[in-house]
Image 1 (cartoon, rainbow, N blue to C red):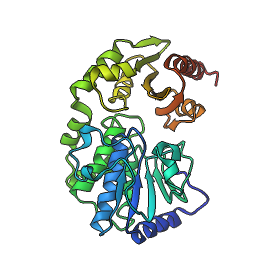
Image 2: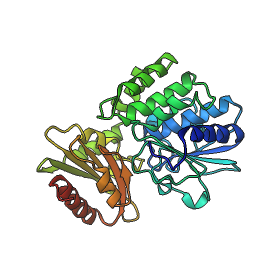
Image 3: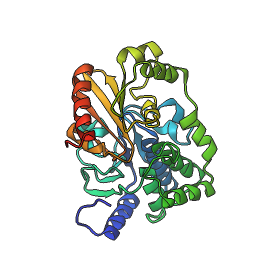
Image 4: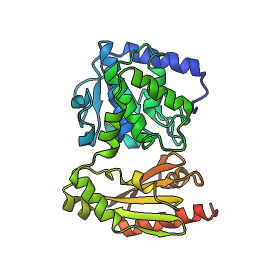
Length: 324
């Protein structure tokens, strides 16, 4: 667990006090939100609503279509509307990942599981041993005075499923599976959530995959490919994310590290690394002002696609050759 020099019991007491005393909390997560970000923001917000609070859920990039069936998803907005008396960041390793830090002078509470977390809030609870931020909430919401009903359980289990690619990542533990089973006992629909978030795929997403996979390259157990702005336009794909292609790349046989270069507007490239247990790709991501976990990390890098690719492939090769 990563914390400032504060006793863990004091942190939990502080979190319980912050959430109980707030009436209009602002709940935020990161740009290009994944299932863990969305499950965390919805799960905590629904728990707060059950206590009579009026939380405001904000995701700068909005909500991907496959998550819109979750209870509470229709309450998510793209921008801050109205007053708030508490700011909570979930699943964010640093303040920049929120997407609109200039609008938010202070983050009061930061709950996350990334080992690269910068402890940017006044109160920080970071548990890198947990494979997902939703798992932290599943474990501690009762300690903070909240009950978990079926809708909250669905949101939390969805985040746990997606951040471990269906319980397949190397950081899944018996404790994590026990938390998932407990959420199922509370009514969470594991088969349905698994299908909607990991199996079902839209036609535009499939077209993105087809274009990117046709360009895949590999050398010395390193594989990489790109999603370009032209790909996104041709497929009529509305999001800025990678349509979960980076997770598919992690399953490539005889590949130790896979990289997906996702071209963005304004001369930026979102880079996603996936690796097996041999290499800690969070170290490379941190070089580019990014972060993440040893087996999965990312960074947004300014520059043209070809320039960024050359730079990232060079640094990744150094790591794999033991030169870093």
